[in-house]
Image (spheres, rainbow, N blue to C red):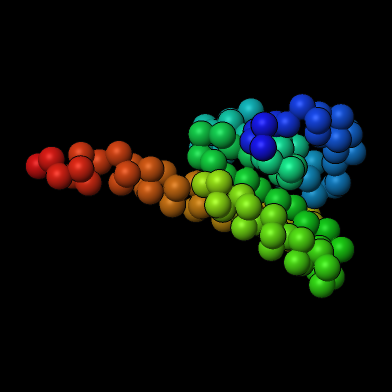
Length: 136
């Protein structure tokens, strides 16, 4: 694959998705944009391989997906599973929320994202620790 991140062939589709965000995506974007989420920069409609993530933090390799009701049907669940496997195999953590969850309880969604960020931060800190490299 020539482009893993922000494939140029998907540029028009990413623009279209940014212009036509769902209500839930718009609400969540208001909470994660401009480094509002623990000072991390999130981008919207960012592509990784052949897939476009709703929101993505490069520094954390964290994707956030906001799913509508059609994600519940069997075919789409299979597609989402393949998509998640691809992303995980490329070192990306993905957390998913339903549209209704974002709209009805945005604060809880924000708290879940902050917890995931803390988990990743801890993991990154642990990986960088000199104690992991046999240096004491």
